[in-house]
Structures are given as structure tokens and as C-alpha cells.
Length: 116
Image (cartoon, rainbow, N blue to C red):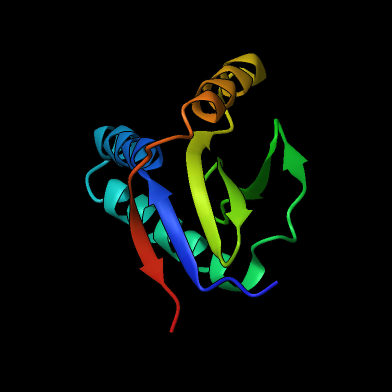
């Protein structure tokens, strides 16, 4: 399936910002590297969306350079990123986050990454 758009929902943007802050606290500049790396992973969904296995009701792509997972779903020609969560967290916490977000689907807003 060809994906034309990647839409990052508000909750996922908050996850991304939280990760950036976490790494900036560890060492200056690492947060920016985290941000750039995860955006590159998100952009790759235009090509690779749909090939990832499902976990907790969403497809899960593992980030290339950081221990994070990107959870998304595909509707028509758009990949909706619902969460970007650290893999070092308890799996029960991850499952709870995804269950909560799955129940809040209606009326979501997000930022769009367009394909070329």
C-alpha cells in the first residue's frame, strides 16, 4: 500500500518533545539529535508503512538510533502516528498508554508530513 501522508497526532508530538527534553537533560545537544533521528524514522513511514508487526492494536516501528517505538495505524493513504514511546518503560505502562489513546480517536489533531 502506498502512503501519501504521515500525520503525527498531538499526543505523539508530546511524546516526541518529552523524549527530546529527557535526552537534553542527559547531555546538551543529544535532544536535537534525538528529534532529528525520530523525524527521519517518521518520514520513512511514507515508504515502509504497513510492513511492521502489530502490538497492542497498532503497528509498531522501532526507531533506528534510540530505544523508542513508533505506534501508528493506516487509514486510506495516511499513516496516523498515535504514540512515540520509550521501550525502556514497563510493557504494562505502554499497553495502558496505547489503550487510552485508542479510546480517544475521535476529534484528534496532528501535524502532517507530506511525501515528495
